[in-house]
Image 1 (tube, one colour):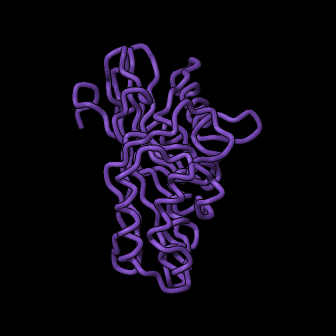
Image 2 (cartoon, helix red, strand yellow):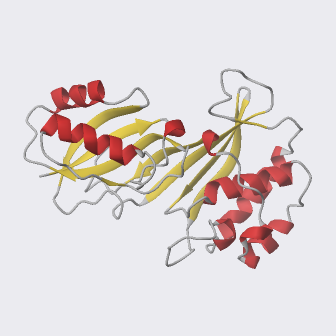
Image 3 (cartoon, one colour):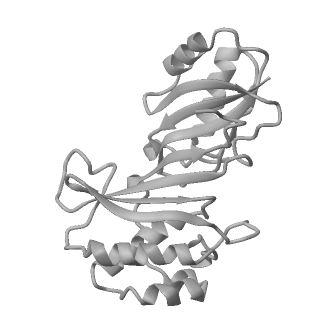
Length: 248
């Protein structure tokens, strides 16, 4: 039988979700814990990669297993075995054809920026001291919806077959003392969100005019875009599936 596992993780200690031969990953830890809990090797397939240091407040993976009769007990056991920076929230029985990565229809990220030194957020938010023109940043963010080829924001050495992504929404919102960039798309390229945020911050700081963003995107050149912001402030916050697969 196939199950979707819903989890969350603080990415600080990990080299992303996906298994790495020479670095610790969330996938590796989860598979080790499943081996202990189920007493059989249980490969897991994640919804996609996250960069080293990036967090996920909602993440899905799938695995195959014999019938799990007491899901709550297994969830409790997994959380007891997992380190404090990884938590399992749910186990959902799905069809044998359901796929955590290929059936995902949308993903949403949030990037957190603070403009006042905050000792309680320094590990999960990016500190930008100088003033930001949020109106210009949002004007530029709206421009992203007019394009589909985002090679300029992609990591240079990557094995993707296409740089096309359909961005559904992108905007900056302020919640109390935190400035948050929220973006949703059908898919994302490696390093894409961090490169977009870095570029938008340069616009907000007055280093780059809004109109320049068109040239940057159309150049398809990573060197034309802004510097990638730190991974510590980026969260994968939502993964969407058809209701026929995951009715949540």
